[in-house]
Amino acid sequence: MITKRDLNQHTAAVLDRVDDAHDVVVTERGRPRWRVSAVQDPDTSLARLEREGRYTPPAPDPAPWPQRPGGPQYTEEEAEALLRELRGDC
Image 1 (tube, rainbow, N blue to C red):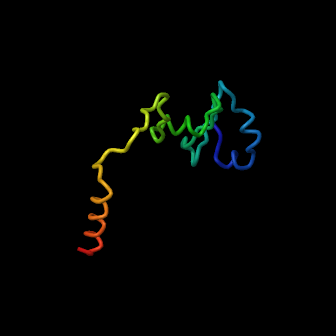
Image 2: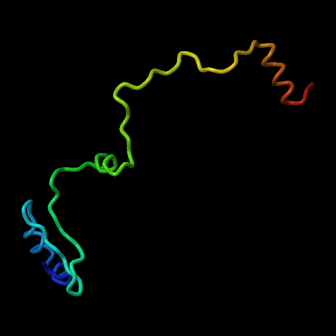
Image 3: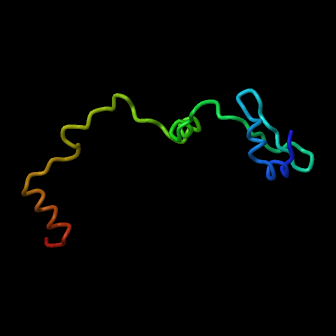
């Protein structure tokens, strides 16, 4: 264990004590508050977000886009009539 003040005053020396097998517990007013530990594996930002449930990677085989979007099919005359109606030209 090390005090918060010692960590502040001797940061490099404290961090030198941290390795895969040893963590350093930092105390404040005699009570353990923080743990400094070595990173076990290189963790990318996306891997961390995925682990936290804040990111979902894209599917490896996504569904294909539709050939033609759905919805009603209008002839040119029907489309013109709808536009006239929307504009209030009727």
